[in-house]
Image 1 (spheres, rainbow, N blue to C red):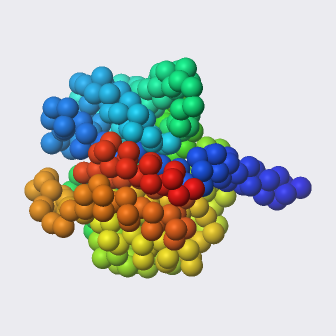
Image 2: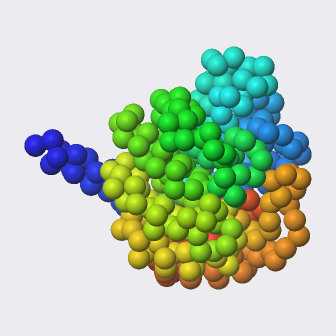
Image 3: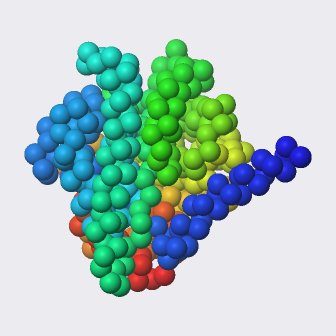
Amino acid sequence: MGVLFEAKEEQERAGLLEDFIQKAGGCAVIDGGFATQLEIHGASINDPLWSALCLINSPHLITKVHLEYLEAGADIIVTSSYQATLPGFMSRGLSLEQGEELLEKSVKLATEARDLFWETVEKIRDHSYNRALVAASIGSYGAYLADGSEYSGYYGADVDLNKLKDFHRRRLQVLVEAGPDLLAFETIPNKLEAQAVAELLEEENIEIPSWICFSSVDGVNAPSGESFAECLEGINKSKKIVAVGINCAPPQFVHNLIQKFNELTEKVIVVYPNSGETWDGVAKRWLPSKCFNDEKFKVLAKRWHDSGAKLIGGCCRTTPSTIRGLSKVLKKTN
C-alpha cells in the first residue's frame, strides 16, 4: 500500500510541472541572469554573497529585476538565493535568525512581484502571459565557497556526503517553509553533491517539485570529470526530483547535452545556459570569449526545444531582452 501511495505522489508531483509546461504551450520559459541585471541597475555585488547581497541592502532592485523578467515573458522566475547561505550571512556578522529571515525574504520578494504583475496583466484583454511559478534557487556548495569550485567539482578531501547534506539542510528547510512553487538546485558540479541533494530531499520528505542542474566546462561531462551517466544514477531513482539539466554552461554545449540527457533519463529536461562568456572564479570577472547575442540565442533555443528540452531560459550575462526573444520564438513554435 505504501509503495502504491508513494508512486501516486511521484506522479502527482511530476504532473504539476508537466501540466504547467503544457499550459505554457509545451515549453516554459525561465528567467535570465539575475546578477547581470542587478549590476545594470547599479548594484555593487563583487562580494562572496554575490546577488544575495541585495537581500540586505537593495531589496527594491530584486523586485525590479523580477518584474522585468515577468514583463519579458518568463513563466518561471528564480529567487535571489543562489549564493544566500546561512554560513555566508553569519560570516558577515548576521545572526542565524537574520540569515533565515533573508532566505525567506528571497522567496517573498519573488512571490510578491509575481502576484503584483499578475494582478496587473489580468486586467488586460487577450494578454499572452501565464501566471508564473517561483523557483527557490539553491546554489551548490561551491557557490558558497565563492572560489570557482562549482566549475571544477573539487571540494577537497574533507567534504563528504554528510557534510554536503548538513550544509544544504537548514537552508532547504527555510526556503521550503517560505512557500515557493519549485526548488532549483543549480550548478551542481559532481556526483557526490547530486547524491547529497537526492538523499536530503528524501530525508526531509520535501513535497515541492525540484529540479537539479549541473554545470559543464567541456560539454561532455560534469566539471568533476564524472560522466553524466554516473551523476544521474541517484537522481533517476529520486521521487522528488522531476527535472534535470544544465545551467551556466556555454550555449554551444547545450544541444549535445540535451541529446545525452535524453538517453540517460525520463525526467523533464531543463536548460538555461549563460551567454558564452567565461567566469574566472578566482579573479571574480568575466573573461572575453565567444558571446551569443539575443538573435543567436533564439535560434539555438528553438533547436533545444526541438531536441526535447521543456524548460528553457538564460543564466549569467543574459538579460530580459534575451528572455523576451526566447518567449516569442518558443511560444510561436508551440
